[in-house]
Image: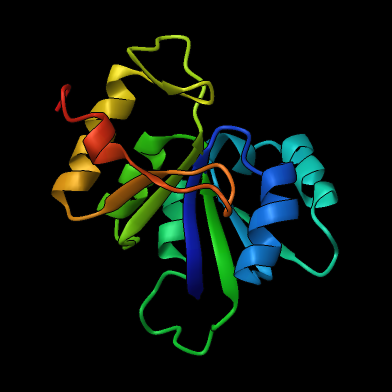
Length: 164
């Protein structure tokens, strides 16, 4: 798989992905990695219906995704430009810890009732979010906040420096 974007957005598939990120990255596959969605036929169906027919949609639980051919090193024939979406940071960290390697994580939208740090109107981080981001940063992953491609990315490490 040619992974062109790894993103956390609690809305998963929505207008910013379909209208901005897919054309900008010339992606032709979206992979939703979420245990709840993978076990909910209705939500899975709604997501698939929202995506244009020329874009492949795959939906996996975290463990199934990490074990999938798309992630395994031996699948070098799969060069499909893919966007991988997680609904929260700790799921991205869990996938990373289980073997899904990525150098950069994009944060688009995180809504959290237990907000400890508000980075923007769209990114409200809990203690668990902050701890997961810190763990990814320690593993060498660059974490940025950017809703759409034309925005300038914000380095999360700099924004959270007082808390880390």
